[in-house]
Image (cartoon, rainbow, N blue to C red):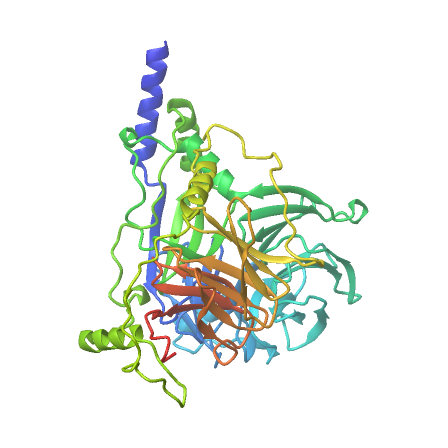
Amino acid sequence: FFIKKRMTEASSMEDICAQPTVCEKRCTVSTSPLSHVQIACSHQYCAFPWSKNELCVWNTADRQAQSMILKGHHQPITAVAIKQDGDQWLACSASQDYVITWNLNDCRKAVLQGLLPRGLVIGTLLGDVQHLAFQMNEKLVVACAGTCVFVLNSQKEEILAELAVHQGPVTGAEFWGDRFLVCISEDRTFSVWDYHAGHLVYRSAIISAFPLLKMYIDEENEQLVTGCSDGMLRAFSLVQEHGFRCLCNIDLRKEKLKFYRRFEKTSSSGRSDYDGLSIHLAGSISMACKTGQRDFCLIASMFENQISLLEFDTCALWQLQQLEARSFALEANLSIVSSNPLLPTSPLCSQVSKKIENTKTNVLQTKIKDQSLVFNNKIRSSGYTAAPRMKMFSPKTNFKKSQFSAVRKEVTSEIRKEYPMDSVAPSNFQKQITLSNRPTSVGGIHYSGDGMKLACGLSDKSLLVFNSTLKGEPEVFTGHNGAINGLGWSYNRRWLVSTSDDRTMRIWNAKTAEQALVLGKEMFSRPVRFPQFYYMDTFILLSSGAEIHLMKYHLDDSKDDLKR
């Protein structure tokens, strides 16, 4: 009976694996990157920016249907939303100049008649709109622009409400019920509004050290789910009597590892990854889920301009996961982003041209640098009349033995121990140190790659580097004029990069605590955060407001001290 059951499961597995559970229905290349632009997908239509200020609409139900290109914006489109209103389908697109609604049924008829589809302008010069959402029961649209939230009439140009309470850009807003609006922001808080009355119902405290990026409202259970840039999902109760308290926290990294351990097959199982897809690393994503066997997903590439429409056989995926859980042992996996080489146009292929060293000049400089210099007006006699010296040279042999090897051995002996993989996370308190004599917040903390150094950025404008054992006095790096909000170590552990609220980025020599490079306000228009050395120390990656900067650099630490 057991053998027969295993054979039945194996045959079922083969049948399910033979059917494509994920297929790419359509794929195209946009003229502008879409990795951080809100795109929209439903079980009937999907929409995304095509050539910056043009909106492309695909029919997800009919693969052979011609794409619709909707024109009306003069600035790049930054957000798109789709809604079904009875038999009608509505789309909304936003840029810095206009917010436009489109009746897709009328647009389809206009295209078939050879006419130019027209939209309805419902908002003008609202700012940099990053998020759009429809009210399902009413004719309303919410637009998030900067720190403000606008409630618009979807049938005419009218601002019904303008809500502002957040200190940072609002990254998402959704209608809840008949009169409430829930917003999340980069200031790490969320707010609940009664948009009919125009007053604030609730504003949360700071719930994370990282900005809130995405949100979802579970209307059935009256819960808000927020997604943070640190990979955490947090669920909050929207029942006012419950005080909008936090219900649970979910670490997506841990859940991802659990998922792989439960459902990932061994290489002998016959199942392979979906290598036929055009996009290997996703940026912006929009899902369309409905009651049925197949769902759709619109994906924009993270580093390229490609966009794809995928179709999922959710029933087959669920059956496959159940069979995997029963048929295969638990096994961890190795995840690799992509095996494809870099594209010739990839910015990662660029290099900084280094200066060619002149060996003859260097030899001459070395000789001059090793000689003593005299800057006095009077020069003493060379000593022709003095008596000859009997002892010309006496080497110094009473050097004190350096304690570096002992310290190194002590540090290494305390750190280079393997932590058991089957043990729980460390929870015992080991040591506590005081960073400052007055209350000072820590804006960033980062271990070096070998675990031997620990860097801490403080709000008192200083950067401290400790030994990982936290023994002895730390090295102090000073130079910023604002609180340090981020830092990072280079791969070779020779350099430190830090950013501050003074809108500067500084690179430090980790050994000498000297500044090697300073980029100031003339390069960054908004506060800079999250600095890191990227791609084996080839680039500096950081964020400035809503922008991501990838900068190539070259640090020359071999300058002559006399010329510096």
